[in-house]
Structure formats: structure tokens, C-alpha cells
Image (tube, rainbow, N blue to C red; front, side, top):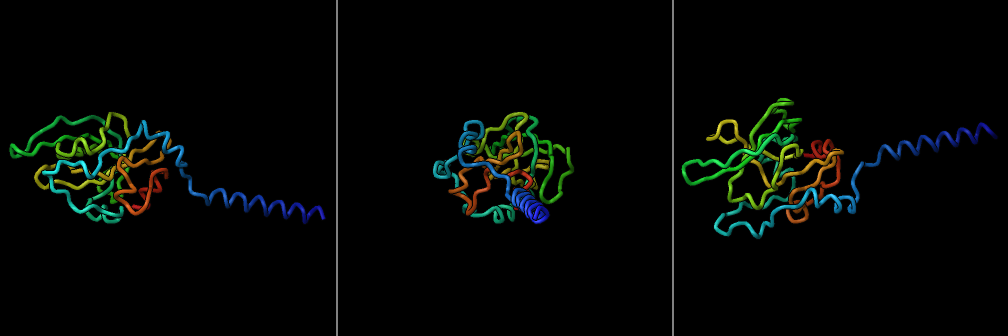
Length: 188
């Protein structure tokens, strides 16, 4: 009888461990809400300068990844000063140290410059040195070594969770905020 009980107890322990490891590590909605002061949602797609024609809004990360060359997980090194091209287009941006990218375009530790048109500065997140992000990028043909970044940026918390810098409910068909960065990179 004692052996049956011990065997039953061992099976329960194994099942409990299997269940625990099969659960996806994810932040609760309360935890996400508490982090929003430090990692705010930026931009309202309806408040972009009305003189700017905005492309069709994507509905999935798969669609966004088709337009991007890769998604980069990296750390902000510094802000890049505003510069002009053709005397009418102004750009701002950031230098990033790459940790990983989804298409293996960059090497770990490589430094890249991500930029966006200043018309979108109030719509995009404001980043600072040391922040970690996951961001879709596309290379410029006319600006060697610079990569345009997309609105669908994710902050990465100190403990490796992602929080969108945009309103996922308005743009995507699925919410990724609260999952681990490794899981996000797998799903993209």
C-alpha cells in the first residue's frame, strides 16, 4: 500500500512539474498596467498630421514582418541628431546595439542607426540610452547604414518581458504585451 501511495505521489509530482513548465510565462494585465507609466503607449493613429498620407494599417505582425527586413532586439546607445535629406525631409533616430534579429542580418553587438521622419516624432516612442526594444526595420537605399523603423515597436523590461509602444488592440489582431522577448521573437 505504501508503494502505491508513493508511486501515486511521484506521478502527481511529475504532472505538476509538467504543468508548471508548460505554462507560458506572461505578465498579468495588472502588472502590464503598472508598468505603463515607465513604458507608455505612444501615438494615436487618428492624430497623425492630416497632411501625411498614412499607409494601410497592418493587422498582424506577419504582415508587418513582410514589409520589414527584420525585427531587431537591441539596446539604445544614443539619440541621433535631426538631419535633412533633399532639403525637405527631416529625420531623427537612435543608434542601437543589436542583441538579435529575426532574419540574422546583423551580428550580435553590431551597432545600427534606426531613423524615422520627424513628421512622426510625436507618434513614435521617445527612447533613451539604455532602453531595450524590439523594432521592425527596413534598410534605406538612399541612406547607407540607416534603417527606417516602424510604429510597431516593443519595449523590453529589465526582466525580459515585452510591452507594446503602440495600441495593439487598434493595430493588431493579437496582443503580445506581457510575454517574454524570446517568445515574441519566435512568433514574429
